[in-house]
Length: 373
Ligand code: SF4
Ligand code: SF4
Image (cartoon, rainbow, N blue to C red; front, top):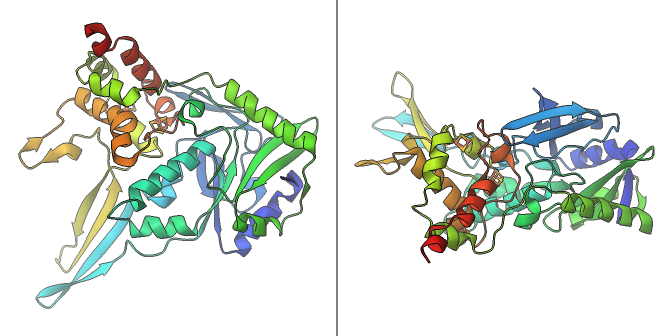
């Protein structure tokens, strides 16, 4: 491991730009941490710390000048790998037919994702299996992902809704990064303990002033991460969870949650692994030009489950149950893993504070199969 001082952070950004990366990272915007283009270290949200509780989020400022003193905001890297709105193709009238121009394979910029949290690496891995793991792959996702550089940031402080330890995704990045930084910001010093995860990471490091980490510095970083793991106040018991949910398909909790859920779809929009989409076809007034756009949709919207013959999920009860069971049960059947990485976004950004960990725990404690046995 090596040490990069905060004063040399701009060299890291230059090293990325020199390799033609567009650097995307956290910025403070509209009272939250958002993701956007980073041109210099001064764009990063210095001294910002987030407070997250079910249905509540705010940023406060501290004098510690930490540049990664918060965890995940409402946006995730999905925004860049799988954009909220994407033109798939256009069609232009040519005589009696149409000429089709495919737009979805248009290359996106080469991104360097700066500040990817360990749970988000887990989410990207899940995105990989969805968009590039089967018979059909998403060409744009595959090319954007292949070109992306991942600079991870380990979490030295969990937010109130994090439960990555339960999902085995954090708070330390263990794989699928180029560089992973642990920020140490105490006693007047401010530096990063850096783990190198790839040849690309090693070559980037060669352009940045650094030195070998001392044993005590590595121990301090590991100590901060252990304290962070131990301080996580939320958890999800995953043992036997898919079977438990399958056994409780008619549990009364689904009615109870439906009384609280607004079916607003916030949880699905902020979730880094939700991938439902729909398409919109648009034509101009002359009928000579048409376009097909893909946009994010949600299993909570009424249109999403409308098929020939009617709507297969008419109630909020069935929609919430579909969402939660897909995340925690059926995802295992489809992709061999949970669909949840424990980032806590769906809890924070739910306007009524519905908490997936509480819902699962309540079903476990009052399981129909247990009561009936
Ligand atoms: S279900 Fe919630 S906690 Fe799990 S990955 Fe999605 S947003 Fe994060
Ligand atoms: S669980 Fe919360 S965020 Fe999700 S649809 Fe219901 S009210 Fe909206």
